[in-house]
Amino acid sequence: MKKYLILIRNSFSEYFAYRLNFFLWRVRVIAIILINFSLWQAIFRQNKVVFGYDESQILTYIIFISILSGIVLATRTERVATEINMGILSNLLIKPIHYFFYNLSRDLADKVINTCCSFIEIALLITVINPPVILQNNPFWLLSFIMTSIVASLLYFEINMLLSSVAFWSKETWAPRFIFFILVNFLAGMYFPLDIVPQGLYRILEYLPFTYLIFFPLKIYLGNITIVFLIKGLIISVVWSVFLWWLMIYVWKKGLKIYTSEGQ
Amino acid sequence: MTSIQVFHLKKYFKVYKRNSGILSALGSFFNRKYEIIKAVNDISFEIKQGELVGFIGPNGAGKTTTLKCLSGLLWPTKGKIEVLGYRPFDKQTEFLKKIALVMGQKNQLWWDLPAIETFRLNKEIYEIGDKNYQEILEELIALFDVKELITIPVRQLSLGQRMKMELIASLLHKPRVLFLDEPTIGLDVVMQKKMRDFIAGYRERFNSTILLTSHYMSDVKSMCKRVIIIDHGKLIYDGNLENLIKEYADTKVISIDLEGRIDLKEFKIFGEIKSGINGKIILSVPRKFAPEIATTILKKYQVEDLDIEDPEIEDVIRLVFEKNKK
Image 1 (cartoon, rainbow over the protein chains, first blue to last red):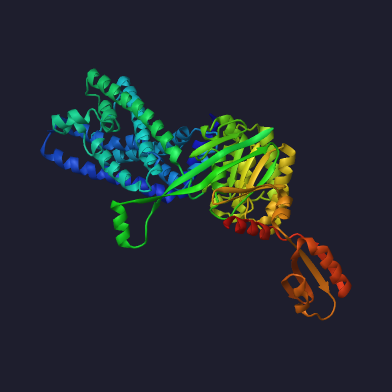
Image 2 (image 1 turned 60 degrees about the horizontal axis):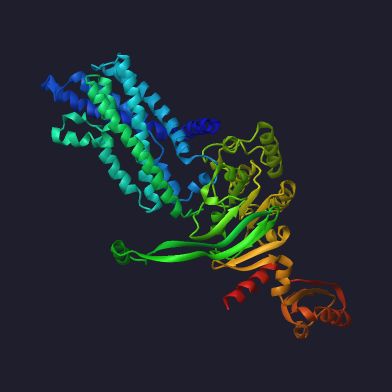
């Protein structure tokens, strides 16, 4: 267990070696929030309620994406494909360490740093612009929010590991990842709550794992949902995460058999 | 006790082929051509616990591929491997704790952090006790003389310094089987010598099995009694290094220091003149006539010094490869 703690500590220290990169990354996150924020504010100037959401709900949704990005979307798994292609993976494969847990530890460090930063940024944003933000105080919804965020993190990890495993078969891993990110931003609800899309489309989205990355936990945070919605969502996301875990291990084992350890 | 067993090991790679030029690149987009490379093609050998074996071959002979199969990184296309009774590819924790693979170009160190952070992480990964860790770490730091360097971020170290850190990181858990791929690459001559002494000493102290590849024949000559030679994925020699010289080298080298002026042409009758500068002549002569030739030279000329030696190991290995080609 201690090895994973040291891994987390090393990942932290590594972060601070490139402070400017990190700072600019955070600037990017804030810029996206501000753009979305002003867009929605403009819409609410004309209407009190849009697609069933009032101004405070939508603005809370947009601002809290920052925290959820820290918890769910912060990852270092994009390195895995490079590690496979460059043969760096060999350094880890010959050590008595579980590669998935190794990556989860690296991710955890990433998530802690990004989440802490987003809390500070949001506090600053709220102080400066003073938007009508909903601060959830019902422990049940807060607990459900935390639980679904953890499931979301696991889902995102599995999807990323699967995408990185493409490197075993192809050197070209950048394109699938790029398309995936565009898809995720839309399908996970990064721009708007997913239930504002036409019902027919939403019925399909409900059964995809991406919905449970951002939209589902945030919807729970806002609290205006039924228990049926919560339970149904939990079942679908847990089934997805179990299936993707199995698939991730299956693909990984297949990949290791054709791994060439090139470049080392 | 047998430590490593390899039976009919084959490792083939599928390699994507492409000619140069835009047109052929475009063509290969629709019609990819592959080639099967037989990196290791049916080799078998056994190594006993405590043996130090040199693994020799030209570039692309299959040495590193074999080491990677033995350490469990690569899935063998065919054949069976057992290392310390384990099947390497299964990567069982107990197996991984007992082996180490040191590759010259490998980088297991955390690039942006000082090497000591990697050492501490390895301590936990290999579950090394505090006392054991301190002892071996101090010993390795003293050996490589790197006390001042372990707290400097790795990216600021030179290639040779990084190599030393790589070695320390790989040896902290005192592996029972050590695969060394070019362990002296990037080290200066003094350090190379220290490294060789360390490897030989390490084997004696821990009765470890060591399989090493090196481009420097002096590494092999000074450390290994037994060598395994492979070329084009095939095993072409497995045995004693001295026997290899006897078996393949039908010549001896005579070095002579002469007084006064000499006519080099006179020495042509004895054998091939390798060099002849300032009264120092190096001759390559048929092995069985070497004593007679030496006696004749001693009688006929004013000799200051004369040596009869086996040819350089590099030359013998070259001969082995040339014979193999035929």
